[in-house]
Image 1 (cartoon, rainbow, N blue to C red):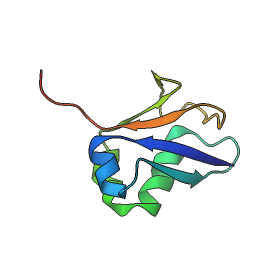
Image 2 (image 1 turned 60 degrees about the vertical axis):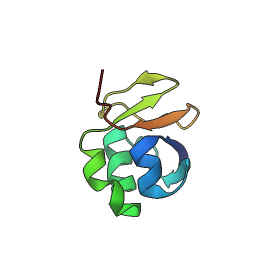
Image 3 (image 1 turned 30 degrees about the vertical axis):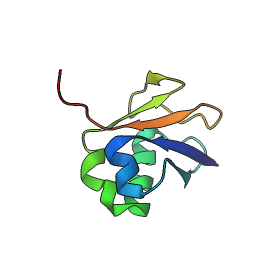
Length: 81
């Protein structure tokens, strides 16, 4: 399966696009998605250690299975007030 991942802020800058495609095996988790993205986009490596994924506007756990029918976003860490 292939999923589309929306990119914001530093993630968007790291990949040079507002979204990317990532091929995954069926049953893959968000942790697997992070590994796949780090492999395709080495500039995301350090950011992925503190970023979170969201699916349909809700945060997901790294052990959750990726549902390719949801809107997936990579949310970089946010600082400030």
